[in-house]
Length: 135
Image (cartoon, rainbow, N blue to C red; front, side, top):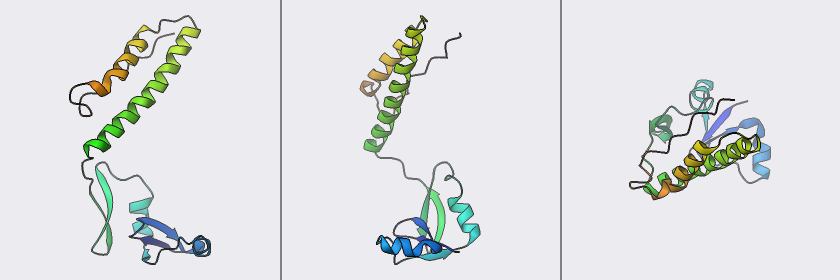
């Protein structure tokens, strides 16, 4: 079994699965065999912070990730905010259902809703999550 890298797809393909990829029309024509060490270095773990995988001079390497565009940064921050809103709504409901004070989480929810309108968004500081309520 060998691991093959496709520069056009920036992905790894297992040679033992070639038949299945071909049937699906997904077997790239630009495959290059990579060593087990290269596979471990580039595909067994997450990319190092601030790095992206690149294929240059016929070899894999980590390069500095480009800064996201303002549109990408806005999308990232809005996704974070939406996830936080979902979580805080659940927390407020749980606290209210158990007769506990949810006021600090309600204030946080307001800050989350206002976050995209802050001056400097998406580069402004994120609202700080309150500490969990002691039970």
